[in-house]
Length: 592
Image (cartoon, rainbow, N blue to C red):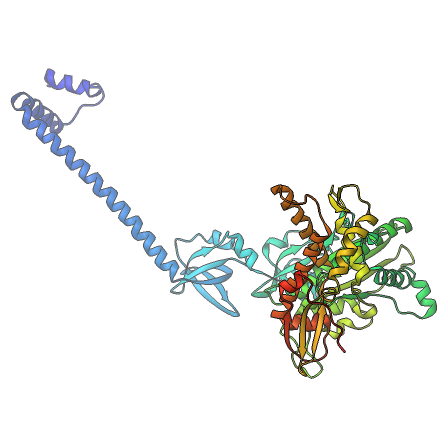
């Protein structure tokens, strides 16, 4: 029988005595605890606390053991993966001893066992550009789901020509120089329909597998310039009339009227070379103005103009073959794609290479390297220009392509590129700037704003172009243009004078006008001196830029030799002392 104390304890503890009753041993322990609580409650409390401490200590030990086990497991995993080798996974298959993986490293194929902890289903999802980790001939992990792996795996781009065996994922591709061959599609490409005209990206270390699709040729190139945004006009430029007239005439005859050329037996014009031994002579501005002239002319006569501008070294790339691909695909791919589109108007595509000499040179006839700048882009450009055909389709409007190259170093342009049928169809050189041309250039930079001019002891803001020329530009140029700023001696000790006009390029006249306006601005801000631009300010600006250029030539006599085209050996170069130049004491003396 249960006494009342035990029954009370069981009921307080939630026992239902009709359904569950502790066994004899449990009842004895309950009775013993009740008796001890009556006789020695302190001893019972001490024993309870000891039990709680033991319980907490045991829990801490379990947690520490769990953490240590996790750290050990991670350490072992890092050690295994750190010593693991990376392999491409080709296939996974089941065997009696467990799963087996066929892996590839380069051209070597090997078979490894798969660690039991790895899920074979995850291995089957590995893409061709991803890796498995192999340690001690066991596949222990993967390196997957990393976007950089896909980007790094990109290799050659080839043209898709059609399916060879759709079930096996085999397709025909075409390489520019090597004809057609068959490659295998990666699993991610087998289910999609590849449009005709697309490009396939081959895997960099496995050129027999295609891993990505590039859509058909885009009609827009990264080199295309919106021609409507050009704000340079030919009639706003100075000293370019001779070359502008010649280029426009050649284009009118050879490009826009091919029937006339055909009747007279003239070859079509494909390119021109625009050169200047002095930098800053306005080549880029001239080409911009000519492009806009073409645009306006086309709007009047029913054809569209597209401008492509290739900056210096824009075709250079670290990866072998990319230089040529940029020319063939990024530039000429867009040209061909636009030509193939249906159109109702004629199409004129104008391609401009800035600093075309940066393409370098090829080997000469004796296979000796003439330049360290070997570029696949040059070979691609020569090939594409050979393939240029000015088409006058019988069932649609004609399409024309004109290539222009700009350079300050025409001698560094490859000779093959300067032949007729390429850039050698027309050789243009920026004209030298005489006194009248310098005045025309300065007049351009004197326009605009609300400039105060100091003329005849008065400050005027309403001077017209002719008055500025007569009272400011012409007097300043007369004093500076023929002033000697440096001398050089030949190997025979003959001293030859070089004037400011001989070394100043178009950009220098812009700098001189800016400097003259700055001198006036400083006086206006400080409230000291004449608050207007004077002829003396312009003289100061011209002399400063002339002397700065002379100092550059003194430091680099090759610059002097190249820009003045000196044919005799130069022994020394000396600039005129600034004090003498400022006071115009050093007068130009004609050599005999």
